[in-house]
Image (cartoon, rainbow, N blue to C red; front, side, top):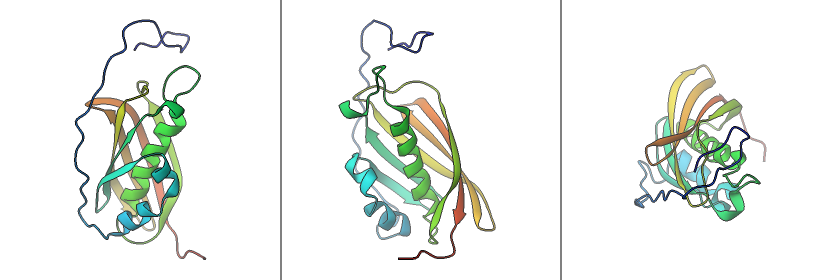
Length: 160
């Protein structure tokens, strides 16, 4: 589906974007990223799946559902951001210390549609002191949907 200059979808055939399901895999089933994700109720309720998490990296998957589509008929950018942010959280928490976002930004490259299967792949770029920089690419198949950059900060302690 094409988007016109006005930002609205244009008429035309809807392109199918099936993706072969893959079995979830992890590099450390009981690692800190997996434990954090298991307690992430927001991501669980949205059907986000953790496929892989290792030292400074993560891969997650989400299918765009009917209730995730905005008034233009495309996936609401907040859901695409949330998928990328969850991949970011898994990657930066894969080292062990509790780590949170200090900031993030996203560039939307192409719209996602209802039924699209999106994959977010996070990679650590650098860490320095208690801070880090992570790049996350959200794809539909091989097509880039969005690029996200997150800045992390290890926190000293978490109060219950």
